[in-house]
Length: 153
Image 1: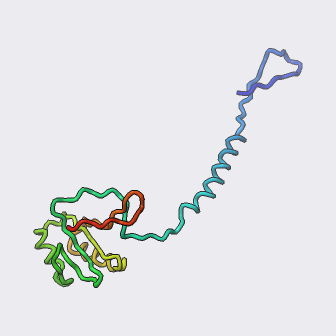
Image 2 (image 1 turned 60 degrees about the vertical axis):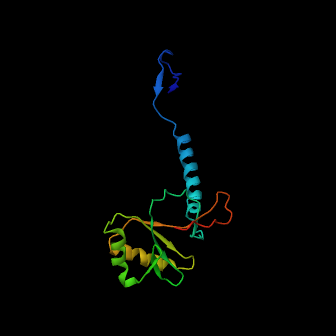
Image 3 (image 1 turned 90 degrees about the horizontal axis):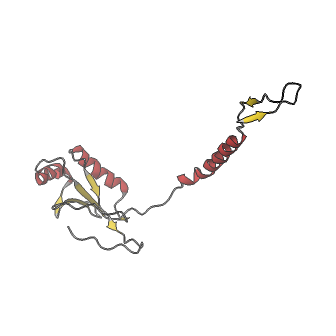
């Protein structure tokens, strides 16, 4: 709180309070923060090329009997170890899961399979009612070395 001294003819004992707030430091801080955000915002939207098949994420606990759906390099589908034609995919999946739509499907794909094909298979799963899909990849060691081979299902 600021005090203004009156040197006029009045008694010197009466001091008036000045109710003005100095906002200049506040405006300076806001402008500095604005400049920092203006410089930092474009840096957070950098396009980065990614190689999706490997991951360093902590693996989720594996169920006792996981159901793997595999897309091989010839775009063939396999449920577990059995090849399945695309036209009979829905019936084969229903028979393996015994109609349980809550079964998590572990989707594996060869590295050469295009992303569009993976999305097509995920849409096939959605059409038959299976919404719990987990993508499977190779696990990278924490030091970023070459990926270790994933264990066989």
